[in-house]
Each structure stands twice: as structure tokens, then as C-alpha cells.
Length: 280
Image (cartoon, rainbow, N blue to C red; front, side, top):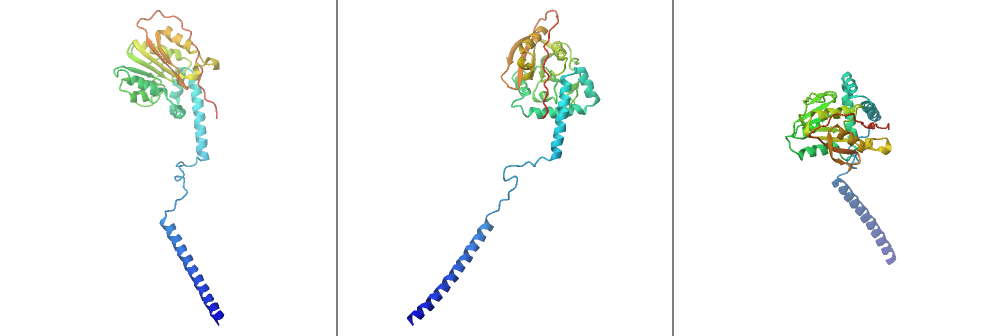
């Protein structure tokens, strides 16, 4: 009988253990449910992985390609025609000028440093009383960034502060300007006539600041010799103050107009290599 009782007791104990294990499992499941409900669920969205921009659609890619194609076409036109031809070109369709400057600004985003910023800082380091002529001003950023009086010239008046003209023939009076600026704007085949106009309007002792794409002054790759370029400007009636070759994208030239000009003689100007963008 002892053995029978023990078997009964063992059976009862095993049942209790099973019931106990079931209770334990239920309690663990409840705890899991509570833990999952209390913890906020993180959705795998683009913002949670640090990407806020939407994928570029095929249509957007095609628009960007077409826009880039138009920019290259207009850019090549400006480098391979005279200022007068470029003026007529934009007068026929002013929207092309806006198209060009959108492409130009996009190209500038790839430059680690922009020459206009250096020129702006140069003006801020000098007297605000200096009167400035900005030849090829674009959106006239220079005039908006300094306290100086700035006359802004370009082929199209991007805003009311810009005078649309051929930069070889401005409305400025002779010897009326303290600083003449050419920031990536010696584009026409007749660029020497722009510099002659700058020489005319500058006061004796006035500054001529030129920023140009570095590849245009690389003699080993079809560009002009910077020394020959500088020599031609000095023959025009300037003397060189300094040159800055430190930037990998552009060169800066600083000149001052001579107090007394010698009799004019024919100047041998080097041709400047057009800055053309490759198709992608």
C-alpha cells in the first residue's frame, strides 16, 4: 500500500508541476506583452536612417540633364562670340540668361571656394568710400554684400540694380571709378575691349581685380601664359601688385592703374582658352 500511495502522490505532484509550469508560462507571456506595449516601436522610415530626400525620379533626372545641356550650349556660345553678339543673343531670348545662371550657380556649388567671396572680403578690408564697377556681375551679389557704391553691368539686367550692356561700352564717365572687377567674366572673344573700358573708367591709381578659371592660364594644356597676359595688361596702362595662384580652381590678379599713361601702342593679347564643360 505504501507503494500505491506513493504512486498516487507522485501523480498528484506531477500534475501540480504541470499546472505550475503552465502558470509560469502564462505569466512570462503577460510580461512579454507588457514590455512590448510599453516600448515605442521604431518604424524603418527614411528619416530614421538619416535620409530625408526622396529618390530622384526618372523625369527629374531627364530635366536635370536637359538643363545641363542648355547650360553647356549657352556657356560655349558666350566663350566663342563677341560681347555684342552675346548681347543680341540674350536680347532675342532673355530667358536663356536665367537658364545660364541657374547652371552657373550649380557649377559653383562644386567649387570649394568662390572668387567673389575673396573679392568681397578685399573690398571690406578697404575703404567703403571706394566706387566699384562690377563687369559681368551676374545676380549682382557683390553689390549686395558691401557698403561701397557699386555699378553692376552684365548682358541682361537680372534685377533693377544691374545695367544691361556690352561691357566694352558702359555709361560710366572717364576716370570715375576706384575699383574695376572682373570675376570669371572675361568670356567674349573681344575680352581685351572690356579691359580697355575698365582702363578708361578707372581713376589714376585705381584698382583692377581679375579672377579667372585656372585652366585658362595653363600653357601646358592650351591655356595662355599668365606672364604674357599680365604683360599685356601692364602695356595697357597698369602695373602688377600681386598674383594669387594658391586656389586650385581660379587665379587672382591685382593691378593698379598708372598715374601717367604713355602713348598708346598696339598690344599683343594672348588668347584665353574657353572654359567648356564636358558632356556627362
